[in-house]
Length: 186
Image (cartoon, rainbow, N blue to C red):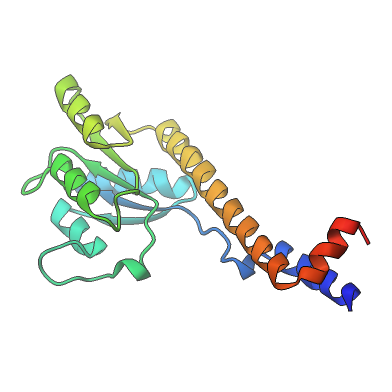
């Protein structure tokens, strides 16, 4: 019986589908300029990211289910790993969007990157103090996107590894005989 448990344990530990393998990073890109939206979308796709683009901060909030009006997507159906937003947009600025996201319990931990063609230090400082992950000057470069992606992947990999370790521990607790055999190296 112990021989049957050992392969089953290894199968569970080595099969990422049992844990929900890590998906590609999903980035919500927000910019009122059609050209800038297409440009950032292309950079993100080249960097192997899943991309959703919207043309305003209000639409971003609606997409996230944080809008006052009708909710298009619920958080339970949505996984966004990064939000990249232009600073200067009509209606609601990227800074105001950042504040609303950081006030949200559902999305508070999602990194937000502000983009702007204007290098205004007080604006940059204010965004970073409010919780922005980074402030990028436009035009955004592929190296900026890759750096952000690599940084996020490390965080996601660590989270995924912790999830696997937790499930392994739960499995060991469910099969105490196997745990004793493993420690005895039988």
